[in-house]
Image 1: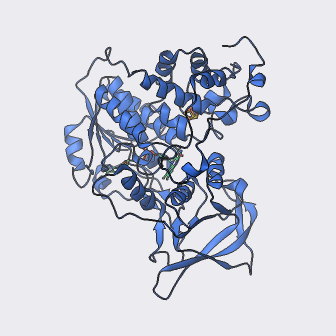
Image 2: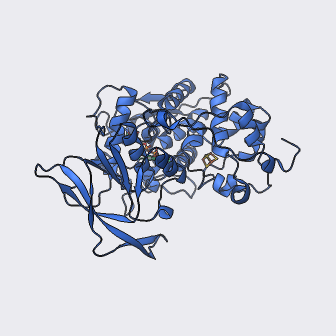
Amino acid sequence: MSQNVYQFIDVQRIDPRKKPIDTRKIEFVEIYEPFTEKEASAQADRCLDCGNPYCEWKCPVHNYIPQWLKLANEGRILEAVELSHQTNSLPEVCGRVCPQDRLCEGDCTLNDDFGAVTIGNVEKYITDKAFEMGWKPDMSHVEWTDKKVAVIGAGPAGLACADVLVRNGVKPVVFDRYPEIGGLLTFGIPSFKLEKEVMRNRQRIFTEMGVEFRLNTEVGKDVAMQTLIDEFDAVFLGVGTYKYMRAGLANEDAPGVFDALPFLVSNTYKVMELKNAPPFIDMAGKRVVVLGGGDTAMDCVRTSIRQQAASVTCAYRRDEANMPGSRREVKNAREEGVNFMFNLQPLGIEVDENGNVRGVTVVKTQLGEPDAAGRRRPEPIEGSEHVLEADAVIMAFGFQPHAMEWLEPYDVALDERGRIKAPAKGDILYQTTNPKIFAGGDAVRGSDLVVTAIDEGRKAAEGIMHYLEV
Ligand code: FAD
Ligand code: SF4
């Protein structure tokens, strides 16, 4: 590390350069250029090593951030990547998609006055560089047990669970209904945030480590849950949340109204040129209105821009400060030409004489008293109703747990919101009410983040090993 204690002033925080806007508006590739070796080293050197690393506490997997920043600064990439994998199963993914402004970087001591250390981008740099250097996890010391675990879902929770299990000599077999691994990392988050090759590389790495993938295999349809119960020593449920929330608007099933995820997934199948694709939902030439203000809404508006929509508007019922989406993504969307309209609540979908969507009736809102979660409730302003004209409307209101009939006979208790009960505290972490079945990620905590799903998958693996006494 530099001997200069004022390094954080002399070297300013920089974020990686973005690709030119003209390219960004048409391409489905990551918008950020990678850090050069020199940039990564200099940015890592801005860390104060402040003694009480707030960044590390705030990071859900409690990454050893100051330590790997120091290693990155000194060019000791292979040591840095080993260290970062001690706490995180997918650091290159988190470096790309974590909302760092709300997590590690938000709590960096330098954040308010000098600009936080670019933790996420250095984390990404370390892993990408290590892969480039031919690094892969060393499995030579692993002593294999005779235990095997069925992991349902190849999203971040399932992959993290499999990662910890295989490193401890327990064989994971991962089932997913999709043809590729990643869950929402592949079939949700678009490639301008996370290129698809990142997960394909991880699939190669995990497979070499001894993880077996059975893709295109839906539990409850292509393979029975009872088969997994009979053939495996434990089962992990990392099945996510896939019930699309609706607002109960008039005409919300009209042609031209789409749920966010099928829209994004159809685009992914096209970008990845996958077989058996669902019908492609094309926004080219259309006036698109996206309803919602979270990360999913941002992904929809930016995908519509890249599909060459005639115009793209994001309508959100609160103000900009109360948007749940990452600030970085809102900024990116704005740069790419998205029109944001705040304090607008949808009242109904308008259709033409053929029943096709022609717009959304909205009413202006003002923010009232805070709700139970502390967020100020939007209240409609009487007489301010008007129509936003649209050829396509995308609903991005979030997700709830979906029903799983195939799980019903197995005594896995759900809470009042349909989430799987699998406590984060106690002797055996993330065990459900069926002792042989464990769960983690969105299915347990409700729709959240990649890094929290990773954290729960890893901890559930510890719970499974405790249960299996390995
Ligand atoms: P998932 O990623 O949903 O994975 C579940 C997997 O289980 C899926 O692959 C599914 O096919 C499989 N599955 C389900 N049932 C079965 C079955 N019966 N048989 C076989 N397979 C099954 N988070 C961030 O941190 N940053 C972001 O920028 C971000 N952007 C997002 C953008 C979008 C559009 C969405 C929808 C979410 C975003 N999130 C983001 C949230 C994040 O993706 C999720 O919190 C995270 O992926 C949850 O991980 P998981 O493993 O619990 O579930
Ligand atoms: Fe920050 Fe996410 Fe990396 Fe943790 S995992 S250090 S929160 S980018």
